[in-house]
Amino acid sequence: MAADAPGPAAPDSAVLDGLPPLVDHHCHGVVRYAPDPGTFAGFLTEADRPPAAGTSYFDTQTGFAVRRWCPPLLDLPAHCPPERYLARRGELGPDATARRLLSATGIGVYLVDTGLPGDLTGPAETAEAGGGTGREVVRLEALADRTAAGYRGDGTADAAEEFADALARAVRAAADTAVAFKSVAAYRHGLALDPRPPGPDAVRTAARDWLAAGAPRLADPVLLRHLIWLAVATGRPLQLHTGFGDPDLRLDHADPTLLTDLVRATADTGTDLVLLHCYPYHRQAAYLAGVFPHVHADVGLTLTHVGPRAPAVLAEFLELAPFGKLLFSTDAYGLPELYVVGSALFRTALAEVLGAWTASGAWSAADARRVAGMLAAGNARRVYGLDGGDGEEAGR
Image (cartoon, rainbow, N blue to C red):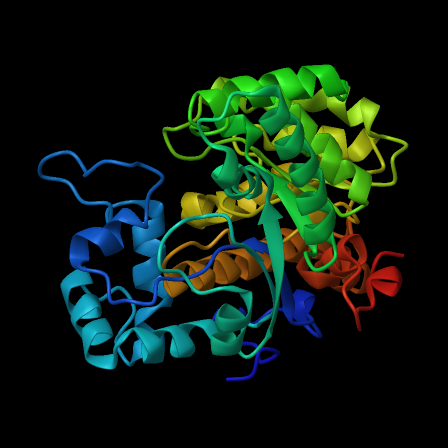
């Protein structure tokens, strides 16, 4: 199925008439192997441990959504048992499964964060399976880890200075091909960072200490701030993880309002900030997007995990977020099923929320269709400067 085909996820609603191919502005690759049942179920949750005894991660909103939307794409009835679904998946193999699922999402552009480890497809391979195009989002912390490889264990001042210079060059070089950068400072330290760019002496001192320690996982707040400001200087959009994720973060340290001073400090740089995920702080993120022109918010990951409550959460985003500031993504990782679920729940939520507002007379049908196109693709095309897009028109 072509990327611009409606796919099984599109409900019968006039609000979605003429909806363009989706731009998934934040996602990850899918595994190239056939996961065993436990590994498959592990991708359905943000937990990093096996489920409690006697329970299953299939018994979650994400698990139920997979069983709702994906079996028909593999010639099975919706809501079939997990065992039957996984058996059919095994019959088809990982490549055929990925092609069937990704080509049914209606996603036309995949902006893939390549910073996660594992045997995952890259932007081109992911997009090819779905019949679309792919671009890379560079994760800053992963880039710093790679750059530090030749300096680990060397705590000299010379090594620190060379590393700092190499890191600045690496960020500038990445900006030549990447569509955006991403920071996971929320995981490494939390979002309550000093908003000011650190001075050269502070960067060299932090780099020397980090390299001398063997360059473990980067969590130094000075270097995290330095990475953010290096990215801001390139003018590429900067994605920032906010809100919930795996247990590696402290949720209370991921409230996007903790970024308020950084948002103010970057207001005149010409660089857009995109707040990812946001839940359960999505209203706070919507507020920031409402009062700062360079801030945008994202519904990715959230809708996948709230299942049939997706319309309520989307409506809460749209209480304060200007309609030109909210972007679609799946944040799919590992399983092509998560692309299907993310796009399906987005479409159904969009149809229900905007359809209800239209039916009530609060919105005109023409405005509802226009806003649907903005959220689906137009806003992302404008923010990321995607070639061939009609973002300027969609955003009017």
